[in-house]
Image: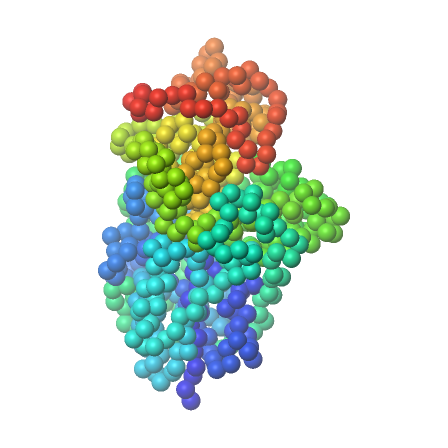
Length: 581
C-alpha cells in the first residue's frame, strides 16, 4: 500500500504546543486529508552552525562551505552557548515526539540537499511525498532565511513536491495586520497603537496528544551536504562533535577560554528544550499575585537573578515557546489579579512581544537593509546614511589588546557597567535588555565603531539570538534604524546608578571591585587611589556628560527604553581611534 507522507522540516520551532504544522498532523485532520504519515525532520544547517567536527560529514558546496562565520568580522555564527542550547532542544523534541509514537529524523549539512535526497528515497520505496511543510521566516528576497526557502523550493521542483510555508512565530499573524507590510509604521509606538487590542492575537493551540504515524526514513547515502545523525548518536556526543571546531579554532577574540574555572553568577540557568521552557512558563506565571510575572513592570530593569525578567527570549528564539502562549498566560494573569492596562506585569510582557513582532515585520518590509552598514536609514535618508557609513571605525586588529573594540568585547573598557555586562554575555550567553542598550550605545555612540561588529559579536555569543531582533535593536541604538531620536545616547554612569545603585551587579561580575564603596564602584578611576589593581586604570573613553553623575548617589529611573541622560558626541572620532588605548 502506497503511503502518503508529509515531511515537516523544523527550524526555529522546536516545540509541540501551538505549532501550526503539528496541529495539522493530528489523525483525522481536515488540513491533511490525504496524508497517512508524517516525518518530522531537523537539519543542522552548515550555513549557521559549524558542522565540520561531525565524524564522516562532508560539507556541501555553497553557504557555510568554508565555515559558518559572520560576514564582517569572521566570528563563529553559532558559538558554544547556543550550540549546546539548540542541540539540547532538538533532542528534547525528539523525546517528546517519541512519547506520541512519532520521532525526529536528525541531519546535518544543507537543508535543500537533505530534503531532495529524502524525497527521492521515499519515492524509490513507492511512497508519495505529498508536500514539505516548514515554518516561514520573515524577510524579503535576498535575506538568508528566505534564500534558504528558495533553495529548498528549487531542490524539490524535479520531484514535483510542493513546499508550504506556515506562520509559526509571531504574536500577531501578519495576515491579520490592519495594514499592508509596505505601510508598516517606521516608529514602534505608531505600530503599537495601530495593533494593540484585547483580540490582537489568536488563542494558542494545545499540543497534540497524538500524531499521524512516523515512517522510518529509507537509507540515504551520506554525501556532500547530506549527513544522517544516527539514533545511536547521543546528545552529548553530537554536542561534543559540534563544539570540536570551535574549541580547536575559537576565532577572533577567544574570550570564553579565559573564563573557564571561574565561579560566576548565571541569570540564565536553562539548558534548552520545550520541556524546560514549559516548566519555566509555569514557574513565572504561577502563584497569582506572588508570581514573578506579576511584578515584571517593577523588576524588568534589574540585572541580577533569574526572575527579575521572564528569560523567555531563548525559548522564543528557538521556538520552544510560542509568543501566543506567553501572551495568553500574561493576559490571564493580569485578569486574575485585577490588574488593568499598564498596571499589570502581563501588559509589559506583551509589550515586549510586540517589539519582537515589530522587528520581524521591519525585516519583512526592508529585507537585507537590516544587515547592511547603511541600515534601514539607507532607504529613508540616503545622504545621512552614506556619511555615517564612511565614519564608522573598524578595529586596527583583533590581536591588538589596546584597540577599543577589543577592549569592549573582552570586558576591559574600564567602565564597570559595560564590562560586567560584556563578561556576563561571554560567560553565559545572556545579557539583560538594559545591559544590551548600554553596551551598544558605548560602542556606537561613544567609540563610533561599525555597529555590525557589535551585532555579529552578539550573534556569536547570545543563546537567544534572533536575526530580526538582534540586528533591529543594534540599528535602533546605533541610530541607523527605527528610532525617531537617532541621537539617542546612553550615559553608563547615570544608568549604573539608576539600575545598580548598590553596585551589586558590577561587583558580582567584577570581583576586583568588591572592596570599593558603591558610590565609587561605577567609576573607580575617579577615586583618589585610582582603580584597584587588576582593573583598567582609565576608561577606554570618558564622555563629558558622565561627570555630573560621579558624585550622585540615588535614583532617577527612566523608561524601559529611555536614553538615560542624553547628550551629544563630545569626542572627535578620529582622535578616539588612536588614543582610546
